[in-house]
Length: 360
Image 1 (cartoon, rainbow, N blue to C red):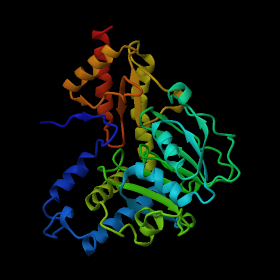
Image 2 (image 1 turned 180 degrees about the vertical axis):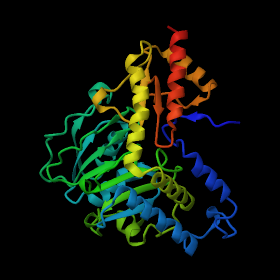
Image 3 (image 1 turned 60 degrees about the vertical axis):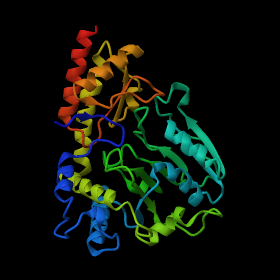
Image 4 (image 1 turned 90 degrees about the horizontal axis):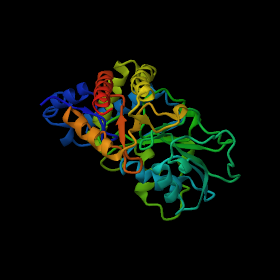
């Protein structure tokens, strides 16, 4: 069976050479006589795996020394609660709601204090990013929260909001490592890895050290304190060991590909192939305001639910899988993460053109 072109939003496509390497090491990791899946997280061999992974991530993102990197569990959704539990000192935070995940994070934060929705694009089904140059930032806000790339709706902040000096917290789950980023502009960058980096089960949190304190909301469980994990170098309890090992391999693959500058160029080329076609097609159209388009997630529709269903079905038969859009948008969505080869996007567009001719 040959591999399909997998356009899933997550868990998503991984680099083929990473999977091959992992397969080769499955039964015996570097002469240890066992799989990484079986080894103690306290062993010297594993310690080297997790430390190398962290260093490679630091190199790729040029993470400043005063930021901690933590490999955690519970996905991005657990961060929706961890962030207010640890950072809401004044019990006030400002949220910019540009999609379902930012909305869920805002709702979760409302359980712990006053979560202000200071801007939203819900009025137009989250198809754009609101102007964030002069927002009503609260005087006593502990942080300003964004979801930087919206997986479901296919939007991306091209400019970070003006937080007027407040700490910026960003969920970057679906644009993680897709382009260079100035980490120093954020207090916290975090994301689930199952979209652009590795297998489901790991969430990476990059946090400025001054934000990691014992001063958390009363009743915060030990496992939900950042300090617990930061002090123990992500080894307070058994981490998602195998997932971290795969992430480490992806970091090395990214370095080999030329780092984040090279990935950005590659991702822009891939996205342009698909967006240019959508802009010229009379059958398919993109759903996002062009200036706010994501390089990673591309939603599109025909305007006819039956036609959409027919397209998804025929695409799957032709080896293009997971193209069905999220139920809140309908239509289709192609997620074209780092590991999606350019050829996959070119072949998809060829197929779309053929479908358009047959169904004009």
